[in-house]
Image (cartoon, rainbow, N blue to C red; front, side, top):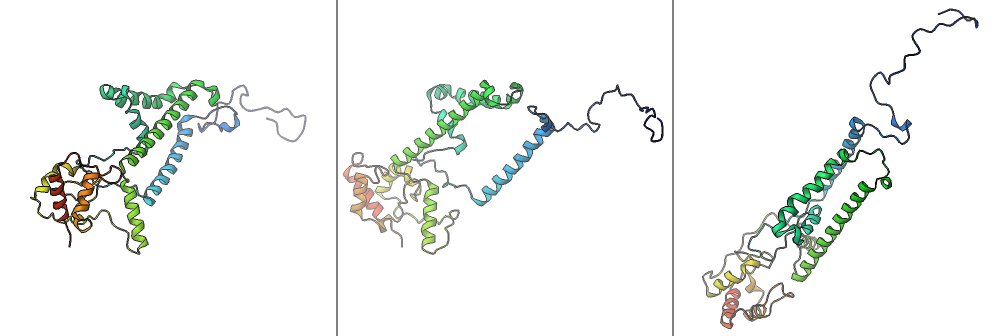
Length: 288
């Protein structure tokens, strides 16, 4: 190459200008913001962003869980016939789905394994099946229609399941366990007392005359709601009921029931003598 600052000097370039530039030397992909309508590489660019968003969501979820504990129910009681089983909210749609005849009973494997496997398998395989370059949802009719149909179905089944559960609670006169606990906490705070600890259960008082003639009838008729020790399950505790009600009042509840059927009426299924035996035995259950 010539030296100096003369304008008429011949300039000789080093290297061959016919060799094309082959991308960035460090192998880093270019900034895709310079190419409108183009997508960026899934690995590592897009995947790294997904991981970062996932970490933020996970931290937020953990903070939420620590700040607001999940409501816990009472210990499971297999003798409680009035208990209404319910899954967590994110499985309500599947719980309602399994109530339909063609995915339950003789077809329960279809509803519990085959159809969920197809749904979740399709979700996992979506990145490999939907390889089109178009990103706008209205130009991807198949993928967009399946997505909207799935969202609508899950939303509908969840709403129907929760609505049916609320109707069952109202029909049977049942108050959810976490609502009972919240009400007890509110009442304790209003009285200026400490928040009750539901993990510590007081020792149940002993039964009076457990071999009495009325106990055998209670054992066969009442333990489904009042528990084996009669300390209460879905129904109230019967231990100490003699402090609150007289024999005549107890007999009237046995005959006619209470709370719109939450306590069923036994006037037609028990004889007068059996009702008197049960009422007399319960009236003796007092606490000092």
